[in-house]
Image: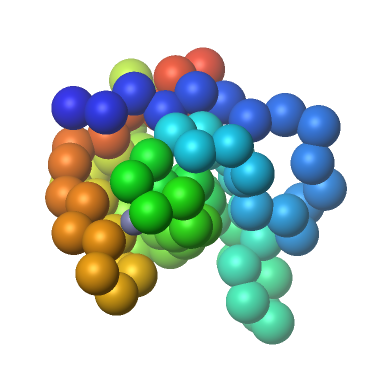
Length: 82
Ligand SMILES: [Zn+2]
């Protein structure tokens, strides 16, 4: 389980900038609000429009980083959710 800290101070179209952080994020031209995290392994942003966040902040299902060559695959918890 990886605990992601809440990022702050960014506009709605910005993904989190610090590795291992999360924030609400507006995804794509349709403006869907989702959660974005910054991968702690490859340091790239990951949008999670198909995941659910439970009341405890736990993300389900587990997070698989989509970026080539990364391989990050962990259960995630959003600290400070919502
Ligand atoms: Zn990654």
